[in-house]
Image (cartoon, rainbow over all chains, first blue to last red; front, side):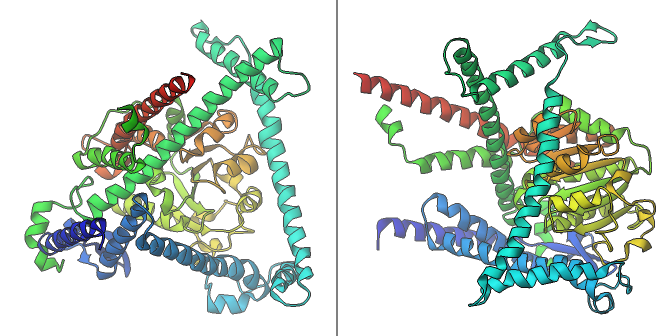
Length: 303
Length: 286
Protein backbone atom coordinates (compact mmCIF):
# COMPACT_ATOMS: atom_id res chain seq x y z
CA UNK A 1 0.00 0.00 0.00
CA UNK A 2 1.30 3.45 -0.93
CA UNK A 3 2.27 5.89 1.82
CA UNK A 4 -0.24 8.46 0.53
CA UNK A 5 -3.07 5.91 0.70
CA UNK A 6 -2.13 5.00 4.28
CA UNK A 7 -2.20 8.66 5.32
CA UNK A 8 -5.60 9.15 3.75
CA UNK A 9 -7.02 6.07 5.45
CA UNK A 10 -5.86 7.35 8.83
CA UNK A 11 -7.22 10.87 8.17
CA UNK A 12 -10.60 9.53 7.00
CA UNK A 13 -10.81 7.12 9.96
CA UNK A 14 -10.13 9.92 12.45
CA UNK A 15 -12.69 12.15 10.72
CA UNK A 16 -15.21 9.31 10.84
CA UNK A 17 -14.71 8.79 14.57
CA UNK A 18 -15.10 12.51 15.21
CA UNK A 19 -18.29 12.64 13.11
CA UNK A 20 -19.83 9.70 14.96
CA UNK A 21 -18.91 11.28 18.31
CA UNK A 22 -20.48 14.61 17.31
CA UNK A 23 -23.58 12.96 15.83
CA UNK A 24 -24.20 10.95 19.01
CA UNK A 25 -23.38 13.62 21.58
CA UNK A 26 -24.52 16.85 19.87
CA UNK A 27 -26.96 15.54 17.27
CA UNK A 28 -24.96 17.02 14.42
CA UNK A 29 -26.51 16.59 10.96
CA UNK A 30 -30.07 16.23 12.26
CA UNK A 31 -32.91 18.05 10.54
CA UNK A 32 -36.46 18.86 11.59
CA UNK A 33 -39.88 19.60 10.13
CA UNK A 34 -43.07 21.20 11.34
CA UNK A 35 -46.40 19.83 10.16
CA UNK A 36 -49.17 22.38 9.56
CA UNK A 37 -52.45 21.33 7.90
CA UNK A 38 -50.80 18.12 6.74
CA UNK A 39 -48.03 20.04 4.97
CA UNK A 40 -44.43 19.63 6.11
CA UNK A 41 -42.26 22.73 6.28
CA UNK A 42 -38.61 23.07 7.30
CA UNK A 43 -38.13 23.59 11.03
CA UNK A 44 -35.17 24.09 13.32
CA UNK A 45 -33.79 22.27 16.34
CA UNK A 46 -35.12 25.14 18.39
CA UNK A 47 -38.64 24.51 17.02
CA UNK A 48 -38.27 20.87 18.04
CA UNK A 49 -37.22 21.98 21.52
CA UNK A 50 -40.28 24.17 21.87
CA UNK A 51 -42.62 21.48 20.55
CA UNK A 52 -43.34 23.16 17.21
CA UNK A 53 -41.32 20.73 15.14
CA UNK A 54 -40.16 17.13 15.05
CA UNK A 55 -37.06 15.19 14.04
CA UNK A 56 -37.19 14.06 10.40
CA UNK A 57 -35.44 10.86 9.34
CA UNK A 58 -35.70 11.56 5.63
CA UNK A 59 -34.39 15.13 5.91
CA UNK A 60 -31.57 13.99 8.19
CA UNK A 61 -30.54 11.38 5.63
CA UNK A 62 -30.77 14.17 3.05
CA UNK A 63 -28.31 16.32 4.98
CA UNK A 64 -25.78 13.47 5.27
CA UNK A 65 -26.14 12.49 1.62
CA UNK A 66 -25.71 16.14 0.55
CA UNK A 67 -22.61 16.46 2.74
CA UNK A 68 -21.15 13.24 1.29
CA UNK A 69 -21.70 14.39 -2.31
CA UNK A 70 -20.37 17.89 -1.57
CA UNK A 71 -17.15 16.42 -0.20
CA UNK A 72 -16.99 13.92 -3.08
CA UNK A 73 -17.14 16.74 -5.62
CA UNK A 74 -14.55 18.78 -3.67
CA UNK A 75 -12.24 15.74 -3.64
CA UNK A 76 -11.63 16.25 -7.37
CA UNK A 77 -9.53 19.29 -6.47
CA UNK A 78 -7.02 16.89 -4.94
CA UNK A 79 -7.17 14.42 -7.81
CA UNK A 80 -9.63 12.32 -9.78
CA UNK A 81 -11.06 9.50 -7.63
CA UNK A 82 -13.99 7.04 -7.44
CA UNK A 83 -15.99 9.26 -5.03
CA UNK A 84 -15.95 12.11 -7.54
CA UNK A 85 -16.92 9.74 -10.36
CA UNK A 86 -19.81 8.41 -8.29
CA UNK A 87 -21.07 11.91 -7.46
CA UNK A 88 -20.75 12.99 -11.09
CA UNK A 89 -22.67 9.96 -12.33
CA UNK A 90 -25.43 10.48 -9.75
CA UNK A 91 -25.83 14.14 -10.79
CA UNK A 92 -26.10 13.19 -14.47
CA UNK A 93 -28.53 10.33 -13.80
CA UNK A 94 -30.75 12.22 -11.40
CA UNK A 95 -30.83 15.30 -13.66
CA UNK A 96 -31.84 13.25 -16.69
CA UNK A 97 -34.58 11.47 -14.75
CA UNK A 98 -35.79 14.72 -13.20
CA UNK A 99 -35.98 16.43 -16.61
CA UNK A 100 -37.98 13.50 -18.01
CA UNK A 101 -40.52 13.59 -15.20
CA UNK A 102 -40.78 17.40 -15.27
CA UNK A 103 -41.11 17.32 -19.05
CA UNK A 104 -43.97 14.83 -18.86
CA UNK A 105 -45.92 16.58 -16.09
CA UNK A 106 -45.33 20.19 -17.10
CA UNK A 107 -45.22 19.96 -20.89
CA UNK A 108 -46.92 16.87 -22.27
CA UNK A 109 -49.78 16.65 -19.77
CA UNK A 110 -50.92 20.31 -19.50
CA UNK A 111 -49.86 21.59 -22.93
CA UNK A 112 -50.87 18.68 -25.14
CA UNK A 113 -52.89 15.87 -23.59
CA UNK A 114 -55.01 18.25 -21.48
CA UNK A 115 -55.85 20.26 -24.60
CA UNK A 116 -56.87 17.17 -26.57
CA UNK A 117 -58.65 15.20 -23.80
CA UNK A 118 -59.57 17.66 -21.02
CA UNK A 119 -62.11 15.42 -19.19
CA UNK A 120 -59.61 12.55 -18.89
CA UNK A 121 -56.82 14.80 -17.61
CA UNK A 122 -59.18 16.61 -15.25
CA UNK A 123 -60.17 13.29 -13.66
CA UNK A 124 -56.69 11.79 -13.66
CA UNK A 125 -54.16 14.56 -13.03
CA UNK A 126 -55.41 18.15 -12.98
CA UNK A 127 -58.62 18.57 -10.96
CA UNK A 128 -58.56 22.35 -11.46
CA UNK A 129 -58.77 21.99 -15.23
CA UNK A 130 -61.97 22.77 -17.15
CA UNK A 131 -63.65 19.71 -18.71
CA UNK A 132 -64.57 21.70 -21.82
CA UNK A 133 -62.52 21.75 -24.99
CA UNK A 134 -60.95 25.09 -25.90
CA UNK A 135 -61.96 26.78 -29.14
CA UNK A 136 -59.85 25.42 -32.03
CA UNK A 137 -58.58 22.64 -29.74
CA UNK A 138 -57.94 20.46 -32.79
CA UNK A 139 -54.94 22.66 -33.72
CA UNK A 140 -53.08 20.82 -30.94
CA UNK A 141 -53.11 17.78 -33.21
CA UNK A 142 -50.35 19.53 -35.20
CA UNK A 143 -47.77 19.43 -32.35
CA UNK A 144 -48.88 15.84 -31.65
CA UNK A 145 -48.10 14.86 -35.23
CA UNK A 146 -44.82 16.81 -35.15
CA UNK A 147 -43.84 15.06 -31.90
CA UNK A 148 -44.51 11.64 -33.44
CA UNK A 149 -42.47 12.65 -36.49
CA UNK A 150 -39.61 13.73 -34.22
CA UNK A 151 -39.63 10.36 -32.43
CA UNK A 152 -39.46 8.64 -35.81
CA UNK A 153 -35.72 9.21 -35.57
CA UNK A 154 -35.57 6.15 -33.33
CA UNK A 155 -37.04 3.98 -36.05
CA UNK A 156 -34.60 1.94 -38.18
CA UNK A 157 -36.40 3.13 -41.35
CA UNK A 158 -37.57 6.62 -42.31
CA UNK A 159 -35.37 8.54 -39.86
CA UNK A 160 -35.46 11.46 -42.35
CA UNK A 161 -39.03 12.17 -41.25
CA UNK A 162 -37.61 13.69 -38.05
CA UNK A 163 -35.98 16.43 -40.12
CA UNK A 164 -39.33 18.16 -40.78
CA UNK A 165 -40.23 18.92 -37.15
CA UNK A 166 -36.57 19.74 -36.48
CA UNK A 167 -36.65 22.27 -39.33
CA UNK A 168 -39.83 23.73 -37.82
CA UNK A 169 -38.20 24.06 -34.39
CA UNK A 170 -35.05 25.69 -35.80
CA UNK A 171 -37.07 28.05 -37.99
CA UNK A 172 -39.44 29.25 -35.28
CA UNK A 173 -36.65 29.58 -32.67
CA UNK A 174 -34.52 31.61 -35.08
CA UNK A 175 -37.49 33.80 -35.95
CA UNK A 176 -38.44 34.50 -32.34
CA UNK A 177 -34.89 35.20 -31.23
CA UNK A 178 -34.06 37.33 -34.26
CA UNK A 179 -36.91 39.72 -33.53
CA UNK A 180 -35.95 39.87 -29.83
CA UNK A 181 -32.31 40.65 -30.54
CA UNK A 182 -33.00 43.23 -33.26
CA UNK A 183 -35.45 45.08 -31.04
CA UNK A 184 -33.76 44.88 -27.63
CA UNK A 185 -30.06 44.53 -28.46
CA UNK A 186 -29.66 46.37 -31.75
CA UNK A 187 -32.21 49.16 -32.18
CA UNK A 188 -32.67 49.91 -28.47
CA UNK A 189 -28.92 49.89 -27.86
CA UNK A 190 -28.39 52.42 -30.66
CA UNK A 191 -31.05 54.62 -29.06
CA UNK A 192 -29.47 54.18 -25.60
CA UNK A 193 -26.11 55.31 -26.99
CA UNK A 194 -27.47 58.61 -28.32
CA UNK A 195 -26.83 60.70 -25.21
CA UNK A 196 -26.49 64.36 -24.41
CA UNK A 197 -22.89 65.41 -23.79
CA UNK A 198 -24.00 68.30 -21.61
CA UNK A 199 -26.39 67.37 -18.82
CA UNK A 200 -28.18 69.84 -16.59
CA UNK A 201 -29.60 69.26 -13.14
CA UNK A 202 -32.79 71.16 -12.27
CA UNK A 203 -31.33 72.38 -8.97
CA UNK A 204 -27.54 72.54 -9.39
CA UNK A 205 -27.37 73.44 -13.09
CA UNK A 206 -24.55 71.80 -15.06
CA UNK A 207 -24.08 68.18 -13.96
CA UNK A 208 -20.40 67.45 -14.53
CA UNK A 209 -20.33 63.77 -13.57
CA UNK A 210 -23.39 62.82 -15.61
CA UNK A 211 -21.97 64.67 -18.63
CA UNK A 212 -18.59 62.98 -18.11
CA UNK A 213 -20.29 59.59 -17.81
CA UNK A 214 -22.21 60.12 -21.06
CA UNK A 215 -19.08 61.29 -22.89
CA UNK A 216 -17.12 58.28 -21.65
CA UNK A 217 -19.88 55.94 -22.79
CA UNK A 218 -20.02 57.46 -26.28
CA UNK A 219 -16.21 57.44 -26.65
CA UNK A 220 -16.12 53.82 -25.44
CA UNK A 221 -18.77 52.71 -27.94
CA UNK A 222 -17.08 54.49 -30.85
CA UNK A 223 -13.59 53.19 -30.01
CA UNK A 224 -14.82 49.59 -29.68
CA UNK A 225 -16.66 49.89 -33.00
CA UNK A 226 -13.48 51.15 -34.67
CA UNK A 227 -11.56 48.16 -33.32
CA UNK A 228 -14.01 45.82 -35.11
CA UNK A 229 -13.87 47.89 -38.30
CA UNK A 230 -11.50 46.06 -40.63
CA UNK A 231 -12.03 47.95 -43.91
CA UNK A 232 -9.12 50.24 -43.00
CA UNK A 233 -5.71 49.18 -41.78
CA UNK A 234 -5.31 49.90 -38.06
CA UNK A 235 -2.67 52.64 -38.51
CA UNK A 236 -2.45 56.29 -37.53
CA UNK A 237 -5.61 57.76 -35.99
CA UNK A 238 -7.65 54.61 -36.71
CA UNK A 239 -4.95 52.48 -35.05
CA UNK A 240 -4.81 54.68 -31.95
CA UNK A 241 -8.60 54.70 -31.65
CA UNK A 242 -8.66 50.91 -32.06
CA UNK A 243 -6.03 50.58 -29.32
CA UNK A 244 -8.18 52.69 -27.05
CA UNK A 245 -11.07 50.39 -28.00
CA UNK A 246 -8.96 47.40 -26.88
CA UNK A 247 -8.49 49.19 -23.55
CA UNK A 248 -12.25 49.56 -23.10
CA UNK A 249 -12.76 45.91 -24.07
CA UNK A 250 -10.11 44.79 -21.56
CA UNK A 251 -11.85 46.75 -18.79
CA UNK A 252 -15.12 45.04 -19.78
CA UNK A 253 -13.50 41.60 -19.69
CA UNK A 254 -11.91 42.45 -16.34
CA UNK A 255 -15.28 43.46 -14.90
CA UNK A 256 -16.82 40.26 -16.26
CA UNK A 257 -14.01 38.19 -14.74
CA UNK A 258 -14.40 39.98 -11.40
CA UNK A 259 -18.13 39.28 -11.35
CA UNK A 260 -17.52 35.64 -12.30
CA UNK A 261 -15.03 35.26 -9.45
CA UNK A 262 -17.55 36.80 -7.08
CA UNK A 263 -20.21 34.35 -8.27
CA UNK A 264 -17.96 31.32 -7.89
CA UNK A 265 -16.79 32.37 -4.42
CA UNK A 266 -20.43 32.81 -3.39
CA UNK A 267 -21.13 29.24 -4.55
CA UNK A 268 -18.14 27.91 -2.61
CA UNK A 269 -19.19 29.91 0.44
CA UNK A 270 -22.72 28.47 0.44
CA UNK A 271 -21.41 24.90 0.23
CA UNK A 272 -18.97 25.52 3.09
CA UNK A 273 -21.73 27.23 5.06
CA UNK A 274 -23.91 24.17 4.49
CA UNK A 275 -21.14 21.87 5.76
CA UNK A 276 -20.34 23.99 8.83
CA UNK A 277 -23.92 24.95 9.67
CA UNK A 278 -26.42 22.29 8.58
CA UNK A 279 -24.12 19.28 8.80
CA UNK A 280 -21.37 19.83 11.36
CA UNK A 281 -23.22 22.36 13.57
CA UNK A 282 -20.03 24.35 14.03
CA UNK A 283 -21.78 27.68 13.43
CA UNK A 284 -25.32 28.93 13.86
CA UNK A 285 -25.62 32.15 11.83
CA UNK A 286 -29.42 32.20 11.68
CA UNK A 287 -29.86 31.29 15.34
CA UNK A 288 -31.90 28.19 14.55
CA UNK A 289 -30.11 26.21 17.24
CA UNK A 290 -29.17 27.32 20.65
CA UNK A 291 -26.31 24.85 20.68
CA UNK A 292 -25.93 24.25 24.36
CA UNK A 293 -29.66 23.71 24.94
CA UNK A 294 -30.10 21.50 21.91
CA UNK A 295 -27.14 19.28 22.73
CA UNK A 296 -28.40 18.92 26.29
CA UNK A 297 -31.70 17.37 25.26
CA UNK A 298 -30.64 15.83 21.94
CA UNK A 299 -31.19 12.20 23.03
CA UNK A 300 -34.80 13.07 23.76
CA UNK A 301 -35.21 14.44 20.24
CA UNK A 302 -33.96 11.21 18.72
CA UNK A 303 -30.86 12.79 17.13
CA UNK B 1 11.90 31.50 -3.84
CA UNK B 2 11.25 32.08 -7.55
CA UNK B 3 11.65 28.37 -8.29
CA UNK B 4 9.35 27.50 -5.37
CA UNK B 5 6.53 29.72 -6.67
CA UNK B 6 7.11 28.72 -10.29
CA UNK B 7 6.65 25.03 -9.51
CA UNK B 8 4.04 25.47 -6.77
CA UNK B 9 1.43 22.71 -6.89
CA UNK B 10 -1.93 24.33 -7.71
CA UNK B 11 -3.56 22.31 -4.92
CA UNK B 12 -1.90 24.64 -2.40
CA UNK B 13 -3.79 27.49 -4.04
CA UNK B 14 -7.05 25.53 -3.75
CA UNK B 15 -6.29 24.99 -0.07
CA UNK B 16 -5.52 28.69 0.44
CA UNK B 17 -8.80 29.65 -1.24
CA UNK B 18 -10.73 27.15 0.89
CA UNK B 19 -9.18 28.67 4.03
CA UNK B 20 -9.86 32.22 2.80
CA UNK B 21 -13.54 31.39 2.36
CA UNK B 22 -13.94 29.10 5.38
CA UNK B 23 -12.28 31.33 7.98
CA UNK B 24 -14.72 34.28 7.73
CA UNK B 25 -17.63 31.82 7.74
CA UNK B 26 -16.41 30.13 10.91
CA UNK B 27 -15.59 33.47 12.57
CA UNK B 28 -18.89 34.92 11.24
CA UNK B 29 -17.11 38.05 9.99
CA UNK B 30 -19.35 40.81 8.62
CA UNK B 31 -18.48 44.12 7.04
CA UNK B 32 -20.57 47.28 6.58
CA UNK B 33 -22.39 47.68 3.27
CA UNK B 34 -23.27 50.85 1.38
CA UNK B 35 -26.03 50.75 -1.23
CA UNK B 36 -25.01 51.81 -4.75
CA UNK B 37 -27.28 53.51 -7.28
CA UNK B 38 -28.48 50.30 -8.91
CA UNK B 39 -29.56 48.67 -5.64
CA UNK B 40 -31.24 51.93 -4.63
CA UNK B 41 -33.06 52.01 -7.98
CA UNK B 42 -34.39 48.47 -7.43
CA UNK B 43 -35.49 49.37 -3.91
CA UNK B 44 -37.21 52.58 -5.09
CA UNK B 45 -39.08 50.81 -7.90
CA UNK B 46 -40.68 48.45 -5.37
CA UNK B 47 -41.03 50.96 -2.58
CA UNK B 48 -42.98 53.47 -4.66
CA UNK B 49 -45.76 50.94 -5.38
CA UNK B 50 -49.08 51.28 -3.56
CA UNK B 51 -50.67 48.72 -1.22
CA UNK B 52 -52.45 46.01 -3.23
CA UNK B 53 -50.56 46.61 -6.47
CA UNK B 54 -49.97 43.36 -8.39
CA UNK B 55 -46.33 42.33 -8.77
CA UNK B 56 -44.99 39.40 -10.79
CA UNK B 57 -42.04 37.64 -9.17
CA UNK B 58 -40.30 35.38 -11.68
CA UNK B 59 -37.81 33.13 -9.87
CA UNK B 60 -35.73 31.75 -12.73
CA UNK B 61 -33.03 29.92 -10.81
CA UNK B 62 -32.29 26.56 -9.21
CA UNK B 63 -30.38 25.21 -6.19
CA UNK B 64 -27.07 25.51 -8.05
CA UNK B 65 -27.24 29.31 -7.77
CA UNK B 66 -29.21 29.49 -4.54
CA UNK B 67 -26.13 30.74 -2.70
CA UNK B 68 -26.03 33.87 -4.84
CA UNK B 69 -29.70 34.41 -5.56
CA UNK B 70 -31.48 33.01 -2.50
CA UNK B 71 -30.80 36.13 -0.38
CA UNK B 72 -32.23 38.34 -3.15
CA UNK B 73 -35.34 36.20 -3.49
CA UNK B 74 -35.87 36.35 0.28
CA UNK B 75 -35.36 40.13 0.38
CA UNK B 76 -37.67 40.74 -2.60
CA UNK B 77 -40.42 38.65 -0.99
CA UNK B 78 -39.98 40.42 2.34
CA UNK B 79 -40.10 43.85 0.70
CA UNK B 80 -43.30 42.95 -1.20
CA UNK B 81 -44.88 41.63 2.01
CA UNK B 82 -43.99 44.79 3.92
CA UNK B 83 -45.50 46.89 1.13
CA UNK B 84 -48.64 44.65 1.16
CA UNK B 85 -48.35 44.01 -2.58
CA UNK B 86 -50.18 41.17 -4.34
CA UNK B 87 -47.49 38.64 -5.21
CA UNK B 88 -47.72 36.38 -8.27
CA UNK B 89 -44.84 33.90 -8.34
CA UNK B 90 -43.79 32.02 -11.47
CA UNK B 91 -40.72 30.23 -12.87
CA UNK B 92 -39.14 29.49 -16.23
CA UNK B 93 -36.78 26.94 -14.66
CA UNK B 94 -38.11 23.49 -13.71
CA UNK B 95 -36.82 23.73 -10.13
CA UNK B 96 -38.03 27.32 -9.81
CA UNK B 97 -41.30 26.39 -8.02
CA UNK B 98 -39.25 24.83 -5.21
CA UNK B 99 -37.33 28.10 -4.91
CA UNK B 100 -40.67 29.90 -4.75
CA UNK B 101 -41.88 27.50 -2.05
CA UNK B 102 -38.67 28.14 -0.15
CA UNK B 103 -39.28 31.90 -0.17
CA UNK B 104 -42.93 31.42 0.79
CA UNK B 105 -42.03 29.14 3.72
CA UNK B 106 -39.15 31.30 4.86
CA UNK B 107 -40.84 34.69 4.63
CA UNK B 108 -44.61 34.59 4.18
CA UNK B 109 -45.58 31.57 6.30
CA UNK B 110 -43.01 32.36 9.00
CA UNK B 111 -43.34 36.14 9.37
CA UNK B 112 -46.53 37.14 7.55
CA UNK B 113 -48.95 34.35 8.50
CA UNK B 114 -51.98 36.59 7.97
CA UNK B 115 -51.40 36.65 4.21
CA UNK B 116 -53.72 34.19 2.47
CA UNK B 117 -52.85 32.01 -0.49
CA UNK B 118 -54.95 32.97 -3.48
CA UNK B 119 -55.81 36.38 -2.07
CA UNK B 120 -52.42 37.89 -1.26
CA UNK B 121 -50.01 35.57 -3.05
CA UNK B 122 -50.16 32.78 -5.60
CA UNK B 123 -47.62 30.38 -7.07
CA UNK B 124 -48.31 29.96 -10.81
CA UNK B 125 -45.54 27.39 -11.06
CA UNK B 126 -43.20 26.40 -13.87
CA UNK B 127 -43.93 26.60 -17.57
CA UNK B 128 -41.55 25.20 -20.14
CA UNK B 129 -40.74 27.13 -23.28
CA UNK B 130 -38.23 29.71 -22.04
CA UNK B 131 -38.64 32.98 -23.95
CA UNK B 132 -41.67 31.46 -25.72
CA UNK B 133 -43.53 31.61 -22.40
CA UNK B 134 -42.69 35.31 -21.96
CA UNK B 135 -43.68 36.06 -25.54
CA UNK B 136 -47.12 34.52 -24.92
CA UNK B 137 -47.89 35.83 -21.44
CA UNK B 138 -47.05 39.46 -22.24
CA UNK B 139 -50.32 39.47 -24.16
CA UNK B 140 -52.22 36.40 -22.92
CA UNK B 141 -51.34 34.97 -19.51
CA UNK B 142 -54.47 32.85 -19.24
CA UNK B 143 -53.76 31.13 -22.53
CA UNK B 144 -50.78 29.44 -20.91
CA UNK B 145 -51.65 29.39 -17.22
CA UNK B 146 -54.92 27.49 -16.82
CA UNK B 147 -54.11 26.35 -13.27
CA UNK B 148 -51.73 27.40 -10.51
CA UNK B 149 -48.92 25.21 -9.16
CA UNK B 150 -51.36 23.30 -6.94
CA UNK B 151 -53.66 22.51 -9.85
CA UNK B 152 -56.38 25.00 -8.86
CA UNK B 153 -58.26 26.49 -11.80
CA UNK B 154 -56.97 30.01 -12.35
CA UNK B 155 -60.55 31.36 -12.59
CA UNK B 156 -61.20 30.16 -9.03
CA UNK B 157 -58.28 32.16 -7.58
CA UNK B 158 -59.63 35.52 -6.32
CA UNK B 159 -56.45 37.51 -6.92
CA UNK B 160 -56.33 36.46 -10.59
CA UNK B 161 -59.37 38.64 -11.33
CA UNK B 162 -58.36 41.37 -13.76
CA UNK B 163 -54.99 39.77 -14.51
CA UNK B 164 -54.93 38.81 -18.18
CA UNK B 165 -51.36 39.50 -19.19
CA UNK B 166 -48.00 40.66 -17.84
CA UNK B 167 -49.01 44.19 -18.80
CA UNK B 168 -51.50 44.13 -15.90
CA UNK B 169 -48.70 43.94 -13.33
CA UNK B 170 -47.30 47.14 -11.90
CA UNK B 171 -43.81 45.64 -11.77
CA UNK B 172 -41.98 42.50 -12.84
CA UNK B 173 -39.24 41.33 -10.47
CA UNK B 174 -36.94 38.73 -11.96
CA UNK B 175 -34.34 36.66 -10.13
CA UNK B 176 -32.21 35.08 -12.81
CA UNK B 177 -29.46 32.47 -12.99
CA UNK B 178 -29.08 32.39 -16.78
CA UNK B 179 -31.14 31.31 -19.78
CA UNK B 180 -34.11 31.85 -19.66
CA UNK B 181 -33.91 34.85 -17.38
CA UNK B 182 -33.45 38.59 -17.22
CA UNK B 183 -32.10 38.94 -20.76
CA UNK B 184 -35.22 37.27 -22.17
CA UNK B 185 -37.50 39.34 -19.92
CA UNK B 186 -35.82 42.46 -21.29
CA UNK B 187 -36.02 41.25 -24.88
CA UNK B 188 -39.59 40.01 -24.93
CA UNK B 189 -41.36 41.98 -22.18
CA UNK B 190 -39.69 45.24 -21.16
CA UNK B 191 -38.44 46.34 -24.59
CA UNK B 192 -41.59 45.75 -26.68
CA UNK B 193 -43.84 47.29 -23.99
CA UNK B 194 -41.78 50.08 -22.41
CA UNK B 195 -44.84 52.02 -21.24
CA UNK B 196 -46.66 49.02 -19.77
CA UNK B 197 -44.01 46.72 -18.30
CA UNK B 198 -41.45 47.85 -15.68
CA UNK B 199 -38.74 45.34 -14.90
CA UNK B 200 -36.13 45.10 -12.15
CA UNK B 201 -33.87 42.13 -11.64
CA UNK B 202 -31.33 40.33 -9.52
CA UNK B 203 -28.86 38.11 -11.31
CA UNK B 204 -25.73 35.99 -10.89
CA UNK B 205 -22.30 37.58 -11.23
CA UNK B 206 -21.69 35.86 -14.56
CA UNK B 207 -24.74 37.54 -16.09
CA UNK B 208 -24.37 41.02 -14.63
CA UNK B 209 -21.89 42.49 -17.18
CA UNK B 210 -24.11 41.28 -20.03
CA UNK B 211 -27.10 43.10 -18.56
CA UNK B 212 -25.46 46.46 -17.85
CA UNK B 213 -26.09 47.78 -21.40
CA UNK B 214 -29.85 47.60 -20.69
CA UNK B 215 -29.57 50.03 -17.77
CA UNK B 216 -31.45 52.29 -17.20
CA UNK B 217 -33.80 52.49 -20.20
CA UNK B 218 -34.80 48.84 -20.52
CA UNK B 219 -33.88 47.75 -17.00
CA UNK B 220 -34.23 50.47 -14.33
CA UNK B 221 -32.47 48.53 -11.59
CA UNK B 222 -30.23 45.49 -11.23
CA UNK B 223 -28.76 43.59 -8.29
CA UNK B 224 -25.51 42.05 -9.45
CA UNK B 225 -24.54 38.88 -7.58
CA UNK B 226 -24.19 38.60 -3.82
CA UNK B 227 -22.89 42.17 -3.55
CA UNK B 228 -26.14 43.51 -5.03
CA UNK B 229 -28.10 41.25 -2.69
CA UNK B 230 -26.21 42.56 0.34
CA UNK B 231 -26.82 46.20 -0.65
CA UNK B 232 -30.52 45.59 -1.23
CA UNK B 233 -30.82 43.69 2.06
CA UNK B 234 -29.32 46.69 3.83
CA UNK B 235 -31.92 49.02 2.31
CA UNK B 236 -34.81 46.71 3.20
CA UNK B 237 -33.51 46.17 6.74
CA UNK B 238 -32.92 49.89 7.26
CA UNK B 239 -36.52 50.69 6.44
CA UNK B 240 -38.39 47.59 7.65
CA UNK B 241 -35.99 45.54 9.75
CA UNK B 242 -36.43 47.19 13.13
CA UNK B 243 -33.71 47.27 15.74
CA UNK B 244 -33.06 43.52 15.87
CA UNK B 245 -33.47 42.09 12.34
CA UNK B 246 -33.91 38.35 11.86
CA UNK B 247 -30.54 36.86 10.71
CA UNK B 248 -32.27 35.11 7.80
CA UNK B 249 -32.70 38.54 6.19
CA UNK B 250 -28.97 39.22 6.46
CA UNK B 251 -27.68 36.26 4.41
CA UNK B 252 -26.27 38.45 1.63
CA UNK B 253 -24.45 40.74 4.05
CA UNK B 254 -23.10 37.69 5.90
CA UNK B 255 -21.80 36.12 2.69
CA UNK B 256 -19.84 39.26 1.82
CA UNK B 257 -17.31 38.38 4.57
CA UNK B 258 -15.84 35.41 2.64
CA UNK B 259 -15.98 37.54 -0.53
CA UNK B 260 -13.67 40.18 0.90
CA UNK B 261 -11.01 37.76 2.16
CA UNK B 262 -11.17 35.60 -0.98
CA UNK B 263 -10.86 38.66 -3.22
CA UNK B 264 -7.83 39.87 -1.29
CA UNK B 265 -6.27 36.46 -1.83
CA UNK B 266 -7.15 36.59 -5.54
CA UNK B 267 -5.51 40.00 -5.89
CA UNK B 268 -2.40 38.74 -4.09
CA UNK B 269 -2.26 35.67 -6.36
CA UNK B 270 -2.69 37.77 -9.52
CA UNK B 271 0.13 40.10 -8.43
CA UNK B 272 2.35 37.13 -7.51
CA UNK B 273 1.58 35.44 -10.85
CA UNK B 274 2.49 38.60 -12.76
CA UNK B 275 5.75 39.08 -10.85
CA UNK B 276 6.75 35.48 -11.67
CA UNK B 277 5.77 36.01 -15.31
CA UNK B 278 7.92 39.14 -15.67
CA UNK B 279 10.90 37.58 -13.85
CA UNK B 280 10.69 34.59 -16.18
CA UNK B 281 10.50 36.88 -19.22
CA UNK B 282 13.54 38.91 -18.14
CA UNK B 283 15.53 35.70 -17.50
CA UNK B 284 14.61 34.40 -20.96
CA UNK B 285 15.90 37.65 -22.52
CA UNK B 286 19.24 37.19 -20.79
